[in-house]
Length: 505
Image (cartoon, rainbow, N blue to C red; front, side):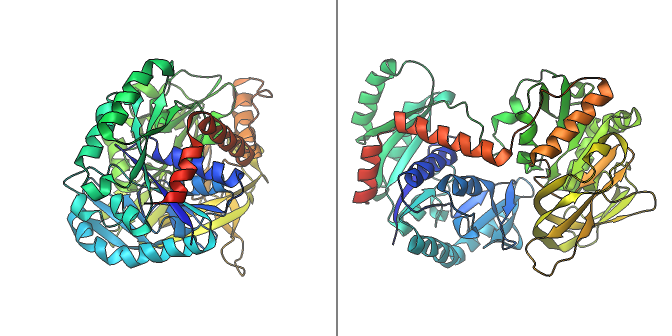
């Protein structure tokens, strides 16, 4: 069976996912068979495996770092929040239903066999498992429900723990000491190393604090990881992408930041293009006059559309569309662009509401979720994005609705379900004037797709975009993973971490 090491944090967004990914890359580079594992993940950014199963994107990124195919075994439980107190519960890649927080806490113990079956299957095939916790192990109001999230999982796996604190948000010494103090004695004994993350500056100034920290906590500091300026996919709603500079580039793309935005990693390829600004906008005053407006995926299409309607963004999108601005919807954003949204089974909010009305199309939400990997190409595209015609694409679908086009709308892409050997090609998405939509996530990942969109937007403005070429996104990610590993090797005591891994608990 594999040896295990677990990364826990003092809070959400302390950097657990990134450090776990970096360790996966280092162990992989050192010749070990390694796999990531997170028993329970709460995120709206998800992914579909080759088997047609759904999992969190953080473990996909970590699997890529480990040089292995993403598997739902790496994330057996995924919670996708539907509101402030409830989530869609996905077990072993398949939806089992929606649950409120108290209902789920009561149900969690029944999932321990699923968690351990997945973990043991990975452990039988690998040398090292890098486990990621969630939130903080010191949430004293939730400790009784920690069957397999933080210390509960560390005990099940017999995994030593590295506890990570975020110095960038301040109070890192209090974070780490306070977390350790709130653990039970047996839990405290499992914490074998402390990590200070996101440090900027001269480390020698930090050294006296580290010495005192080790004395107070009785646990060695095994790394002071720097604030890393690298581009890897994140899945957390706390992502810094949403707070970036709103400066408008030569080609400006605005993404409507709806409250339940999902799979915002779809738009990362545009961030790598010189002269292109990708801005997340949640107020009319910030929209300005972009060259393209993107409506992203969402966990609750109807409620997020009503939010847009109430704050004026729907009207702003309609005004931009009337002026000829390119509008592009992905998944839930695509559904919003239609004429009607109906929810007869109460999958979302229930009832029927009118859509934005930019595509003659009707969407009905169904009880079954579509989960599939696809590839194909754009069909005969009209309007400003005509240059996309015939361009190859690949991605995946995750949605609960079925959309039917009315007269006047045309399909946008021709795709095939790669999860089924006998699948036929089918039309996907829709186009109507300069309004486009698709159910395919990662539709912009192939270099030529982003390039041709930017080229078309530049042509419309009379701008030469030949220097704004994109990159092969997968190759770019591999480069970033290597940078992550190299930086962690510099700032983490890997000899000590290997010793912790070997000694266990």
